[in-house]
Image 1 (cartoon, rainbow, N blue to C red):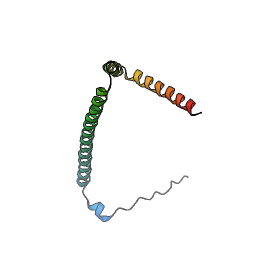
Image 2 (image 1 turned 90 degrees about the horizontal axis):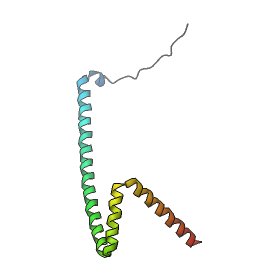
Image 3 (image 1 turned 45 degrees about the vertical axis):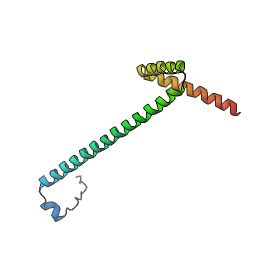
Image 4 (image 1 turned 180 degrees about the vertical axis):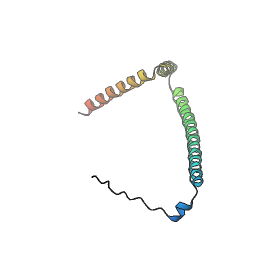
Length: 110
């Protein structure tokens, strides 16, 4: 003969027992709506911040281009166009260049 362990159920408050089930679903719906509203608010803030960053980057790009000679500026535009077409390749090239620069700096410190 096997006995099963006795499970204890948590006692609920009398007020919980008297609450109708629809109030719990309404609370869940309200929380869902609040979460959706908060998510939309955060998404709006992110959009605003992205626009601000784009504007700042554009201004910085314009300043740099004004200081560069025309032939260098044209070459930079070509490189940027290539990077937009092949972003993975550009990222790998950037990492390679950074690793080479890092090794050169370490050699000069010794």
